[in-house]
Image 1 (cartoon, helix red, strand yellow):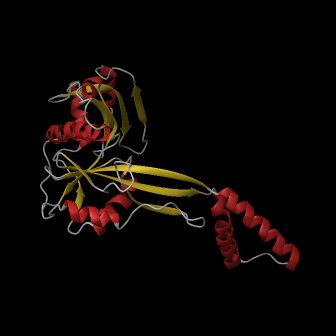
Image 2 (cartoon, rainbow, N blue to C red):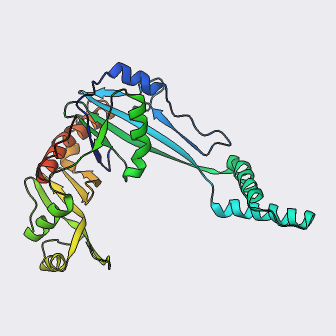
Image 3 (tube, rainbow, N blue to C red):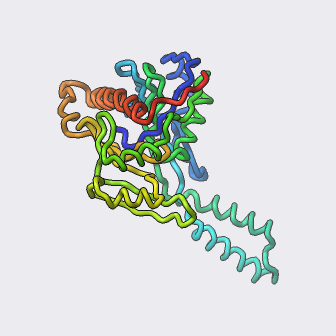
Length: 298
């Protein structure tokens, strides 16, 4: 269900109300782009069934799904049509269009081409951990999560999420783990990492499907490179890649976790219970491995 984790701390002043939240999100449903619309976004029922609620609460954990649809309109296609119209104007009037006229031609070109453009639809899972006060978004970068955060803040009164901050930076912690050739607690070093120089050279080296418990990596660290990505195992339950900005990528649960799934449960409910159950343990342990959470107000 979740492949990437962007983790936020929800202000303790927020009072969760499932009914109110569901009604608020239902007022902003996803509707596909109209022929001349470039982008559409909104919420869909996470269970994927007609008339299902926009917020699913399973074992006290809230699951949401946000969808965006974007028209794919290459700049080269727009420019070609603008150039064609520009040449027509020049042939008819003997003059080249000015800047303002070119801008108008570009707007007209985009408007005429949009109905024929391909669309790209992208959905993101959102988990609100009511018990521990975390917001987790399945997005590959903070930029991709911005629209979701904006929607949640605007639509859920008092909902204030802040990016999770730890006492020790991931880069500092990952450096120590690689130097020690060992990760703390239930974590273990994986087989992938990226090291980058902090000077102007920006020199980098990557290891993939390779043992990280080697002197060569220590040499790179002594030369001034720092880890920006590091793969980790956790309790034989999952594999993940931790980044220097505290993002989790390539999250994959082990076969042992999937074997624990109750085959009699509803497929969606079982997936949610499994995912949130594991992550409810993983996230606090990751925070502990990074020296604990940075205190915040609210």
